[in-house]
Length: 180
Length: 180
DNA sequence: CATCACTATGTCAGTTCAGACATAGTGGAG
DNA sequence: CTCCACTATGTCTGAACTGACATAGTGATG
Image (cartoon, rainbow over all chains, first blue to last red; front, top):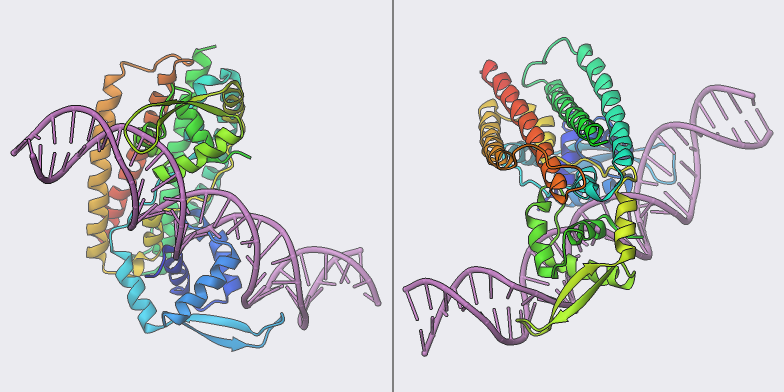
């Protein structure tokens, strides 16, 4: 019954107790590279997880009109997350606006298309440089069983993705230069 | 005002007139590799595009309770699509269930995680072989300006994506084998 | 002659989600 | 002392989307 967003929250909580606000911050970075949610959605989902007994919380006095709620995984939540991790992922439909534009690119002016791809390439190269710096900060992969293994493995995926994407952008730019 | 789905429909219609049914078939393949929609959504969107004057149709007698509607782009629709193509894509949040599972993989048994990645790898390799066959059928890239340029360029993206993904899966499997 | 797959259009109910709105305390900069 | 950024919780509206339901003709297979 739990949605993928619910598991994303459980995955964050598996690394330590957090408030909804903290989870939202994690959903921007680093989890935001592969799953995102606004805080409104997180608070709603947290209430569902609470009703399902997968998380619990302790109220602590803090800023704001309400008490601060520090959430943690229950035994059920941990078990459910562990189970979900190795279930085959149902892939959601791939939706990529740039590729859709590419599909219709033959209608437009080659120069404008080339400029768009040059901008995309620059963005990918910037992200690649950032990821490479982050990778250097790890000195090789952490052992499996360490939570940081997850961070490193997802970073490797991002690294590989940015390289593939940059390569494709370069290929597109080449194609568009030849046709001028 | 037009949604991305609207442009996906316009992009299909730019290649020739089609019924809603035909568009839905295109949304499974080849457009489905980068944008998908069910027929219910397509009929709804088609009505919006019609109200906006971006498409028109001719009713033809055919099977079913209603007449068959053959849609085509209007001059406005073509212009709007051409304009959209070179506007910088606003990237929607990347959502990838496999990477999310990877983030939490440290909780699970290495053997089960490895099996999941082996399955993913097999799927990627199968798709890669299929794409390579399709690429061979083109004998090199069609000229820019030809609608098939769009098909070829998106295929190249798919090819590159599957290679990156397969490579990452292999890396993951290596990591999990070392730790046993 | 019956059944089934395909062509073809549409509605409806429910879910997900993004973005705006609403509220309020703490701590630091100027 | 004022203002601002940050911490912190939540609601609500509307858009996007999924999957089921509903209807009906054509043509091929058995």
